[in-house]
Length: 237
Image (cartoon, rainbow, N blue to C red):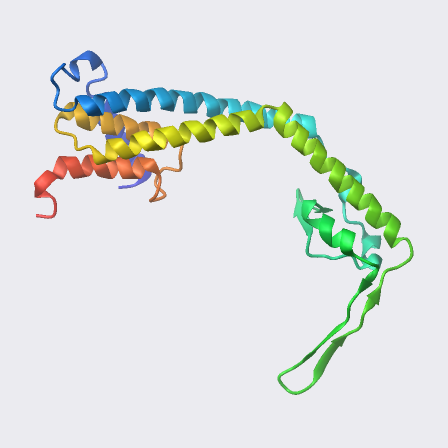
């Protein structure tokens, strides 16, 4: 069953008593514990939906506060003559820039790249001589280091000022709490249709805020829980 089909089945099951939720459980329901777990799952899912919406707003604010990276971070053609370490350079938006990973290699750079040699399978040797940076390498290195430090400081401040940090921390807590509820829902057998609906609703809630269908997300586990309880002792026959 693909993700779309599974969602439709679960949504149909969850909606089958949506018009009269008070009738789903009586005071003596066999699935009263599941009912309580379902209400808590609904509450946490609503919080998570709100936090996901807030995260999008915060992310937009973050990018507004950060703006464009400093021009000094762009790797220039003349930088080739300085023989700066190449591995910490990264590329995004089609532009090659120096980033946080560049700091330590650049700080440790002394203007020389050691040579090396290696024997080939036929007994010959490959020799790459040491390379000395062109004049002006220190000024360019210091410019890059200062730009990276300023850029990362700006990003760190924006991460807080935009609300992104607070939202991510709150979302982490809410997801962890809901995960514990989901574990309890999965492990608690449903004995009535109302109990199965609790599990279906939980699966739908999780599918809205996870990666449904990846084989490991909560909605998959909850969907299997519904199937297990429906099949009961007849499973595998």
